[in-house]
Image (cartoon, one colour):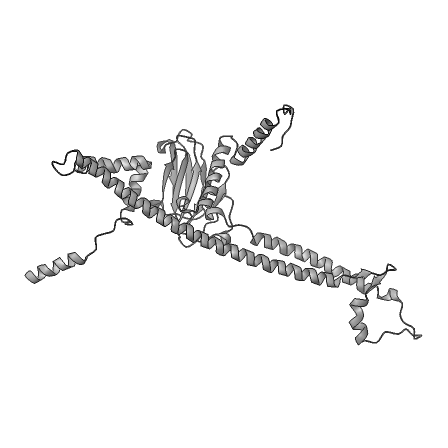
Length: 373
């Protein structure tokens, strides 16, 4: 018995304490709570309410007085700072990785551009070598083109032994002139293909559906951001998600939907959820049934993206690099502005520039001016 007890003690000493900083076992529970609380602050209220009502977290050990409450606040600050440090470290790592990928893509684009320029120079040189110039008398000077042929073949003779007239050879240079023209057309087609190849990848591996939403995706899920009127709450929405269909509308407009369409592919309904963020944005997280394919649109009637341009990386709004996230947020802002009949960010910038110009030139009368923005 003593030996067994000693062995158990040794096992407990060698076992590492569980690491809860990245523990995902309770994600399903927290997702359900988040869906019901509809916001970060209500979620935290729920957690601290449980600790206040069902534990001595704030009171501390018996006899500790106000020190127990101070210790509780200190503990919360410590844990919060720990996770903030983890987030900062992970974000720095993701930013560095994104910078490396962007540098590699830039290098690849530059290499492709160098090859393209070299090809164009070669084609240009070949074209110039085929150019037939006019001589001083206005005729075709083909001496340089036919020198090799004349050296290797005897000149043709007419029946009376004289040299053939120069006009007889004029058909050859005319045909030579036609060849470069056809090459120009072919080159134009090649440039069209190159322009398609140089098109940038879709932002966040998704796109924008005007008047409806902005969406991004990873291999496993889609994130759909729907602009909403200010101060919208979860109870103000009518959201229906099925395996093959998506409906989004406002509760006070039962017969009108922002989205009411068939999904491009199937989703896992039980693992999909939605939240309202900042009181003006609905975020739908749709879990793909087939997690090994890229979607070219969220709904069947939406504009399609080129999935061959998709970058296999995280496309959740919170995980995007700074520049891409700003682009997505600007697209979402413009969507909200258009829905409310207000100017977009670009239009606001132009209006500000116009106002500054008016202030700088008070002597000018703009009352009758027609300004094209």
